[in-house]
Amino acid sequence: MGKGWAKGLTAKTDARVARMAEAHRGKLYVRRTPLERLGWRVRTATTLPLAWSDPMAYVVGLTATDGCLTFGRRRSINFKSEDFELVSRYLALLGRTNTIGVELTRDGNVVYHIQFGDARLYEWFRSVGLMPRKSLVLGAIDVPDSNVSHLVRGLLDGDGSILNYMYQGTGKASGTYEALRTVFNSASRAHVEWLRERLRSQLGIWGSIGTHQANNRIHPMHRLAYANHESSRLLPWLYSGLDVPCLHRKRVIWDSYAARHELDGGLK
Image 1: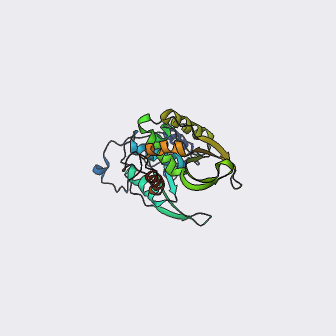
Image 2 (image 1 turned 90 degrees about the vertical axis):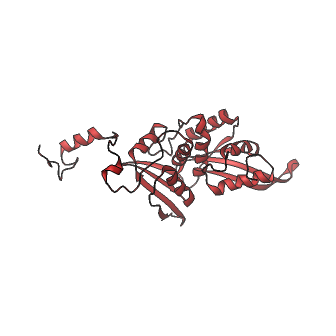
């Protein structure tokens, strides 16, 4: 076969092209010549090292909730959120400068999103427990104990809530009470059970798992929730420093609660 023999041919139209494409499928190739020496115009690249670290653990938590691994002609990573702050922080931690897109949901809400191809990062995500179409099948994430709080904070920022509200008791418990709740949501029961066990072994808190079937959803959602006492142990562990990456509007809820109740771990 001479040079250029495959021009105009595809895997669908030529068996030789199909065999060659299959031989390369799923493989990773390491660049020998640095990009700066090639003189190519490269728009952006991931600079965060592909190893467990506090920033990477937070990124994995966000990817496990609001992210998506897509597998087609390219191995791509998609991240979407209604919080512009979260999408921009996701890019900044990875060291990327991709353009953030904007779209409207069916309900008329604004959603910010990015998508980029990065085969090395994609395969590293898969090696620690993420996968395409993960919503119903996500399970354990292979994170070291030293980084687990940052991962959990990413899970909370991506698909969780910190709730602080007043409510009226009834009967013998009549009166006005203040509630603090930390909630993690997932369509995968295996994932919330893994998270519950990991937090139990790490902090000695148990939480409770509930399941809810919404009318507009085919699959049920599972909810891992922690009440006042356990939230007061969990949240200062998640927000252990002023500079940890997080979604500001959720942290403010905990900081305000901790300041009013003179608890350690909140901003004074």
